[in-house]
Length: 126
Image (tube, rainbow, N blue to C red):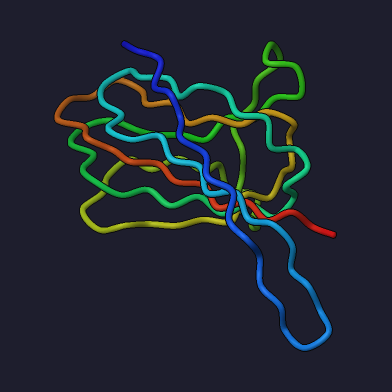
């Protein structure tokens, strides 16, 4: 069980006619294995978030957690209200994150033979 550091890169948004789509934050937690916890990242200003899971989940689960204080923690849901929880993976899978907590992180639970990369793309809504 380890805390996995994230790498966050700010990328320029894009322009579509007279509309500007601001800044995008590309956050990566790489090579998460059994019972790892991702380092919290403060991303509340980036209200539009999508998570992509890639790699291998052998016999475990990875979830996305949110919190406004890093103490009271909840499992994030997708646009249908279903908990974002990936239990098997052989090809990349993505999901919209419905909530906009101040802090966000991935967590792997039990299992074995896990090698998971978790990437969140977050767009600054202007």
